[in-house]
Length: 576
Image (cartoon, rainbow, N blue to C red; front, side):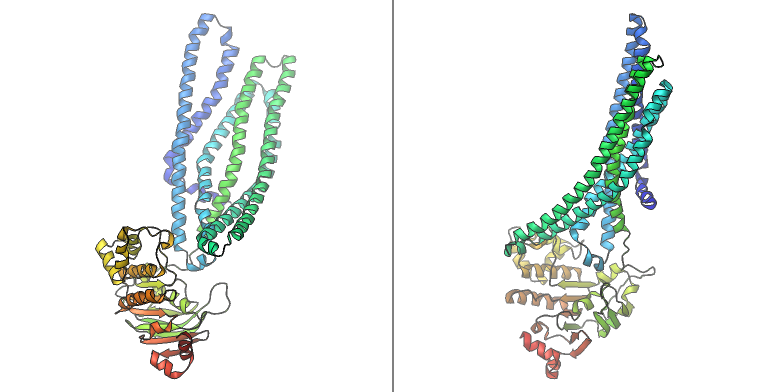
């Protein structure tokens, strides 16, 4: 907890000027609150016994002073409410940027297990509660401490016995608060986990809404959501039970302070120890004293919310990317495109069984190589190792003789273009999605890339052309159109190495013909690796590799492999 608090406090560093200004105005506001009862005491104990003319003369100065104090308190509250909140929003901005940047560095292995909805919860609602704590926490503490300590000193100066009656309750109240605090912290943490689960469920259901409706399974989704929602409600009930006990207990203790003072004060007035004026002043200060205690009660809930959110923030920030640049990583440049798999083995973290086992393969620069084999043989995994989406667990992969782990990730991936079966298009326009391949490209370059990808014609058929909004994940486009946009994106990137991962397997015959033409144009004079589902699309490959669970079982041209009458020949006749 100590390390987390130190890290949390470090986010104040860029905003120390506004932080100290916030604390100054919190102090001034507390000073005004402490001063008002003193004025009341002066009026009731001294001023009312003066001559009427003197009272009227002095009340002018007292009134002016009170209005000045009110103006000061008004601006202090405005500063805290406005600039203090802006400071909190800026810290939230910094944290969200830091978290998003960190998430961008995490590898595929992290996202294989993560749920997008849960990550969204951490980057939105969790961070909001953290910054509410970072903004309100210090000012609530300083206001409360100043008011409590100031009132304590003044109460002692008025009457020590009455002060003792008031503070007799405090040790019991703090012991009670400490006991429930621990239970509340655990309960609020459970709340965060449950709301993250609900977010994940919502994200999953809404992303797959077309599948849901096609199977008429709305009731199943509602049931799944209801189960998650019930779990969240149960966790909330538990946390509010503790919260209710906490607030009720502290409220009773606060009232007990006033009751003690009234009872003790009445006895002391009867015995002539305390004057009525002192008792009235004392009761006014008790309200000044108990109000910050209530603020601290609210702060306790705020702290539980904010701190549990920060713990979850730190859980993500403490995950180290398992794929990162080495200390002496060099830029990969002047790439010709020769790829070597040198005794490569690989297995996923949670899997004892190797997906790839001692693979040795040389792909000459500028060649066209196809990978075929049954599902689960490791074709996609093998290609994912080249741009280091995962790292090999044995052996090494070389590009132009350089180990891919010895070059920077950015320069490595800048030289590799991928066209996958599951095309991901971002919400936005056609132009923006193509230009993703080269963010500084001109409009002319984007149009040229679209023409090469056989996409220009269908794009111009839309009323808004390249400025057409394609919807979430390109939902307004057909499968073939989406695929051609992804190819245009790679044309624009213009990399020396290409990987096609079953890029045409989900398309109809006409779309496949258009996409196949685009792919062949794109592959010209580039090192190309094609994972093929339809073997008719790779008959012109210079080398075809047949991958099985044991490794590369066969290799050769289409004609050579058919002549062998082995695995490839069976696969070919199965799919032809």
